Amino acid sequence: MTAAAAELRVDGVTVRFAGLTALDEVSFTVAPGSIHALIGPNGAGKSTCFNVLSGVYRATEGSVHYDGRELTGLAPHRIAGIGVARTFQNIVLTAGTVADNLMLGRHGLTTAGFASTALRLPKAVREQRRHRERAYEIADFLGIAAHFEQPVGPLSYGDRKRVEIARALCMEPRLLLLDEPVAGMNPTERLAMAATIAAVRAELGISILIVEHDMGMVMRLADAVTVLDFGRRIADGTPESVQRDPAVIAAYLGQQQEQQKEESA
Amino acid sequence: MSEISKRAVAGVGVLVLLALPFYATGFWLQSGLFAMAAVIGAIGLSLLTGTTGQLSLGHAFFLAVGAYGYVWLSGPAGAADGLTGLGLPPLLAFGLAVALTGLAGGLLSPIAGRLRGMYLGVATLALVFIGQHVMLNAHTVTGGYNGRSVPPMDLFGFALADASPQGLLVLGVPFGGLERLWYFGLALVALALLTARNLLRGRPGRALGAVRDSEVAAAVMGVPVARYRSAAFVVSCLYAGAGGALLALVFRRVVPETFGLVLSIDYLAMIVIGGLGSVGGAAAAAVLVTLLPQVLTGYADDLPLLARAGSGAAGPTPGEAARYLYGAAIVLVLTLAPQGLAGLTRRRPRKTLQEHTP
Ligand SMILES: Nc1ncnc2c1ncn2[C@@H]1O[C@H](COP(=O)(O)OP(=O)(O)OP(=O)(O)O)[C@@H](O)[C@H]1O
Ligand SMILES: [Mg+2]
Image (tube, rainbow over all chains, first blue to last red; front, side):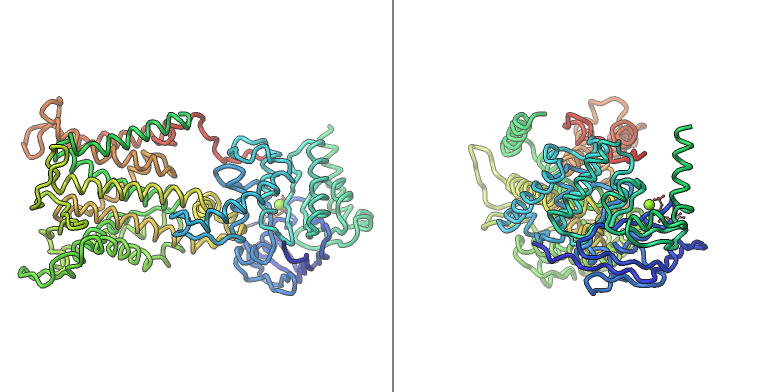
């Protein structure tokens, strides 16, 4: 259905907000078809990086290339058109049903305009029907088909997270950016989500860049890991090598252990 | 309400509307037609403000473009009183007036695409004043302060106005132009409701709703946000154009005073009372807001506290009383029932999309 996954290359990206450097010459490469984790303590710049990749923020310096095309400077809807889809750290859904949300994901793949929709021309009706079927398949894949016709508002937190991922998948992306897909979930939900993410990669063959605080999940899922701290890349490599890296332990894992101690205390 | 009972109510409603010219007096037919024009205009504003989240205070301006556009396009050419006109067949003039209003909206679309929410509201406020200036001063087109009379609608040789020369009896009821204009209005309302509903259920409606709920989410889902904001503006103008042209046909005379800021506010009141984002609610509220003053006028003598318009007696005139009433309705809606009239027909209140992320 879609073109094959390609390489994402982030080259010396710097993002400055008034007086604050959120990203400082960050570079990394996401290999085609891999699951790549982006980790780091709170405020390290992970979401900022996602915002640059999806065109929401503009990099002050540096460049991003996907499949040989420069993404830096492109409008978000153009980047979406190239095959980059994302979810948000705080769920951002639109009013309406699950189906409405998923069909929004099909926006770039459909063409019905104002006139043909207002007049219900057969072309528009057919297109809508066809894409709704595909949206239902994707909902089924994510395990939310039972809620397909229901409003998203009252759904459980975990289900709404799934709606967001399904909506992103409805764009038939080649690169999927997931910002903390299991944050706020209980251990059972986390395991199920990890399985879903692995299944997405296995069945669709797309690349996945994932921001996640759950180290167990990162180690289990990721092929490669990039670690940020205060906007700087402090490590990059396989999960095992990163886990042993003293800088990472100091900046990130140590902090997390402290947090866990606090929580258990 | 269940789907079946909803349909039954709608069916009965349609039958009543179709039968009304056989029973209602001219005053009520005219009031009803006035409400129809408001329904069409309110649907347009509902799509822009309710669905897309873009405020417009310039709706009166676009209603005026539709009204004056129709009058000028269908008006007699080279009339003795210095007025110009193209003298086009009324139906053609009506369609072109709608297109003209869309074009006027299109000229403003760079602004409408770039400004969001409130800011567009402030920018469009200026349109109302520019419109007043043009209406008062472009004498040859608008007739200036005293306005100009409106050529009646004419369908298949039947004039749709009161002064129709052909006497037509249907089932023993004299069928004058007003009765026939009633059906023209009904057809327009049906078309406006259907097209708006189709839009909302289709790809453009979802994109517009996404632009309102989250500009960022819309953009990363592939929606060109500025283009859709502009498009929503143009679409709302098309509805305003049709509403304005129908308004002209009902009034039979267009004057600048009609199209002041108060009219824009009235339309905002309609969509708020109807429940933002609901086309049906906006339509129902449009009927309420336009018919209330008429009802109060019709029964002014029987109601306590009300003074007859122009009688100089103490107490509010029907028009003022109606404003107080729907002013109160807005406060009630905003504080108690944010879903407006549309919320009354829904069984469960829809949960808002407020996040409760941990
Ligand atoms: N639009 C913005 N304007 C100003 N500062 C911002 C903006 N967006 C992010 N920042 C700042 O940039 C830094 C990085 O934020 P970012 O959200 O990217 O962190 P993160 O790694 O995603 O953290 P978390 O794990 O808490 O989600 C923070 O200090 C944040 O306050
Ligand atoms: Mg973040």
